[in-house]
Length: 486
Image (tube, rainbow, N blue to C red; front, top):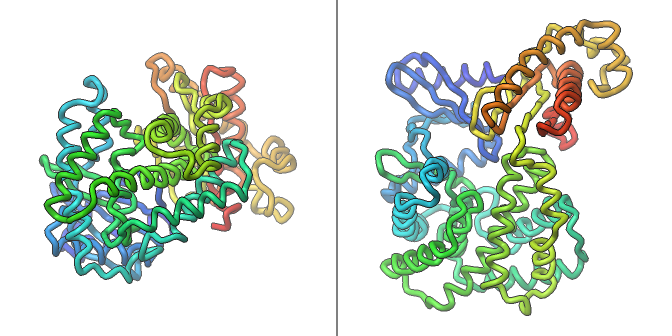
């Protein structure tokens, strides 16, 4: 389904819901998911439209939301839904996430008192969410699992193994690591887990609107231990909370929890650090998949913070004698100069990162996940298409015979010369102003021939001209999705 048809569906449900004409629809940046968010305008009124092909995930979000609203929790209100068309409308909570607030505060001098006060408020609200939110919740709507059980934990640990350790080339012995995984998960499951576990409780999923905190993106929620969500927030790699304040937050949460629940504080603290570790490893698996595999630089930027947090846990709280092989692998990773070089070579913090994408208009224009916005989108569909000929149909713009076609039987190189002049002008200005990200997108009908060729040629021109002065990251979206069978 094209972006155009998706916006038509959203326009239609908006008009039926409010009897208002949708005057404008703005695509919002995605996070790590494939859900698409849009802000829909009619005069001064706005609503958030969500498009998501995953019906079960949509049902989980909507059912959980209705339940949480009945408990008085601060979650987005639902205006309307059409599950058959994969859309629903939500109250607009604005654009200020806790994470974006932290970035603004960092410009004022680091982790400010305002940021600390917000986190202390969250420590007071989280137990209510976990305990009251659990009461009467129908977990049959949970997706993909109704509980954070052994299988869920093993999925997360293997995600870390295959998308972080392997892609970062950290050596390990499969069976020894698996043995410690089994002991580690058995230990975690011995803690009480009859509470609502948000699953992705982190700074990007908390909104700030009119000094009120709202909570979003809990569709992956399930039964689980209290410690998991707490650790997710406090050890959120992107937030980079100071170590001394992490301990104050833990103390404040425990103090708040005592108003809701009777528990053994010493036992709670011991399990807390184990859950902090499994959550951190799951996050690092995601950073590895998005950063190393999908080559998205914004996820690589989180890895140094995650490694720093891992070092903190290993030094202070995780006992090596309980899981000697696992902790040994983690320690070797933290101490590995190769990993630092590996990340640095891809991240290049001091360089301008130019992200070049080829894409198909059928799936829509790629969203800049750095949230900077802007950049270029070039439509390559006016170029003579080799895909119209049988001999080129199964090939792509990287294949030598297709490259020869473009150079001898089309005006693709004239198009590239024109686009490069525009891009080059911006690159010079960005370097002068010390900007860190420029996004360039080349689109065609299928994201296979013309867009791939243009993206490759512009990448080559930029690397040749700037010779290491910029970092160029190339991502052929449709070709990568094809490899994954999507």
